[in-house]
Image 1 (cartoon, rainbow, N blue to C red):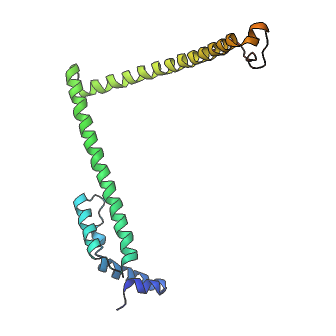
Image 2: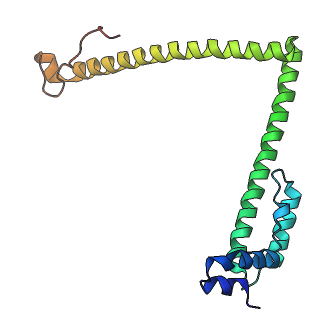
Image 3: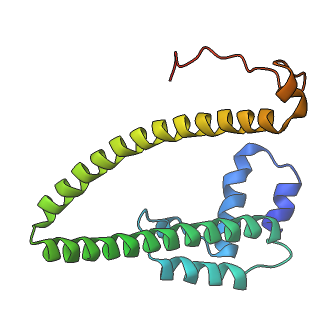
Length: 172
């Protein structure tokens, strides 16, 4: 029997493609029953090892895709494990902090939410004050430049330091 890759490269009619794909799955060791929604990292690594062992010149194009998809699945599972560890660490930290403050975990979460709202209000206020101070610094730099300029000392108008157009404190 011909190899599956050679059969696919011969541009067979579509009715033969399921048979070819079945042969490729058998030669690569891909099982449909093994494609569970919740898989362990060890099972994916085991399947990856089997696919790497069965990789040959004949099955290289399809095997390469299969191996790359297994690597992506390993990465996804590892990311889920890291996120779970981070959540667990955060949970222990929150319970420890709540215990130090003499609160239950639910009270501590509510306290953190209230504190977050307070801090966001302060952040808005500080941002507004920061913009006002930046404008004041800019105006003072301009006045300092005019004081250092000899032409501005003699004349009221200097081409290097024209009076900035402003609407005063209308929008401050």
